[in-house]
Image (cartoon, rainbow, N blue to C red):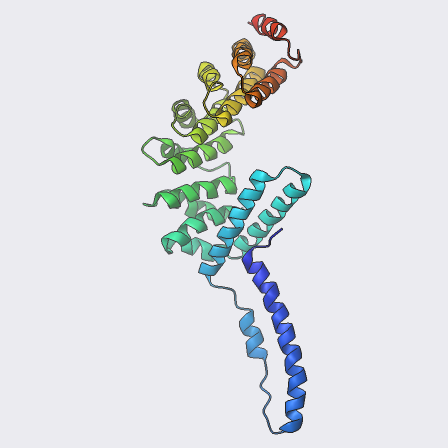
Length: 315
């Protein structure tokens, strides 16, 4: 795993100092023999200067690189070893951001634009309650990039007392795609505990036809978490979405709602089976099939007639 730059540079610096000190001892003894009156200056000041923390600008730049690496690793991680590396990097980011959280808050509130963008995401890694208020305030920033990053920060902070009514308006079509996508992501996280939020439900019902695939996918999961049986047909429609990510989310949503609300099981089952038979895309077919098996708690394999019989006999 490539360590973030600030850690690597610290190790290199420590090694350089060790070599430098060794060199001084060697050459210093020779020089003293030739010039016994030469003053040997203490290196305490030099050592102390190396303990000074790097500037907040440099720190945020390094943290930004670490966050990008963590994001890429988290998305791509498939093996236990890769997942472990992602967790290690996340722990490192959490540690260094928590140590300098007061400075990060100051940068978010009054720093230059680039620093504010990075600071908003970095604060989420602190997992500190102190970060919530500055992040909520950042949702009113005039720069969409800061707002988008603050939403990610709140998602990372993962506090169930996050005021949903502050997030819902950011899902409206008047906002840019990044803001809408991150607002939907955060709302999906907040709804995952099962608590009902009227504004989230209202926005998600519109969001399932948003131009952005990521917004559609996140809104589909919001409807699933809210057990919105009134949106079953809209979710069935998303099984045919042009983007596989959305279709996959819809399949999982239908299986979840159908398993949780008895009177919705038949409609969910028939929608899944019809889409499974109709699709020619092997990956999508596999995703829908797994949702069918989850909902049926049984497996009829590739026998389309048996799946149709199962779905048709449900009320």
